[in-house]
Length: 428
Image (cartoon, rainbow, N blue to C red; front, side, top):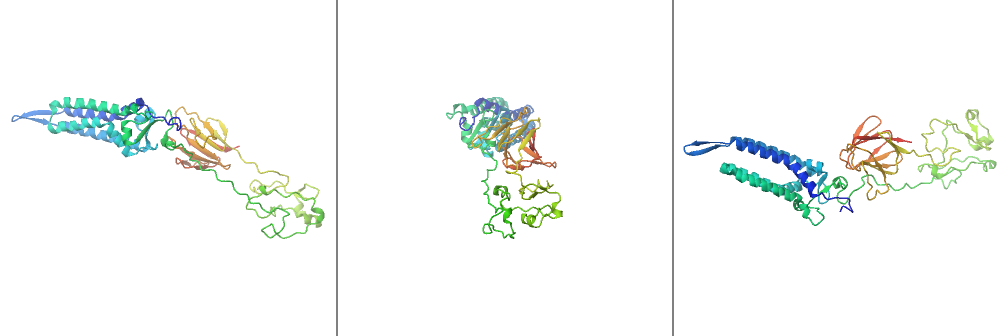
């Protein structure tokens, strides 16, 4: 599993360390509360009978039991939803179900019940001591039971050492159908697609758009779907006409050759040859060829009218290059697919992705935190189920958190926040 899927089973020592950290607060509160309660028991003789006052035991024992149950419920809920506990976080391990996702409340409860069976037996014995008033023998009954319960819990936690499948499961894991992984030595399956992951949550590339050839100047009426008004063309002017614009330079939805707006349209060749230029149109134009064709001067709307085909230009319009600038001043040009994180790793289907490692001494960034997919006008940003999340701030100052696993389109001029770091999206 560690070779093929980059998953590393948690070692017995890390399991034991996490269990001690998780169980110690609850057990300590319970033991201290019962000890105070037993110490407060008083006995008196009345009519030849011994009467025990157990009010302190009921009070402190009830408080300790309630606090312990509340603490264990919080830990159980956290581990059920995320595979994390205080001990798991400190030891760098995660609990998961057999498919590599969050284990769920039922599995976590069963694991805890098997591991803490000895401690629960000691608690039951304490209740029996109170009911049957075996206070003189309480220490001799509860002391050994607590030691046996602690020894049983340790044995269960480290039982994965005897698992023949590479130490993958302990006895409690086998019963609950759970797994425990070392996320410092390998990947975290809960945030990277489970056992069969990791997956790329970025949108799939769409198939290329089919180009539709538009009629060009000089095409016959049968080839053009739009009826055009014929204009007389002197035979002498035809050989010197400029070549027709390339179909690839015209938009697919265009069905007629480009006609310049009336505000700066030159007179048709036939009119120029037969009638001459009108004074109103002659102003502001410069001749460009022997045939008398004239070119309009640079207009303020030229950048907006992308479909315009201007004489003297060749090839498609240049495509803006997307770049990001990190908050530390570094600047990067983006490829088609980019992985960003503390130490990003391309997985199956992402072997050609650009890997952008970002320094993060505070470890607020996940190993593979973001996936960026460029499409020319902007980028699709996907939070790869990171621990500390991501957000986008648009140029107008609106900040929006990213939903993990859901691609979000980001326009140039926006800032993307991931962990404690930020980058700004711009165009070269």
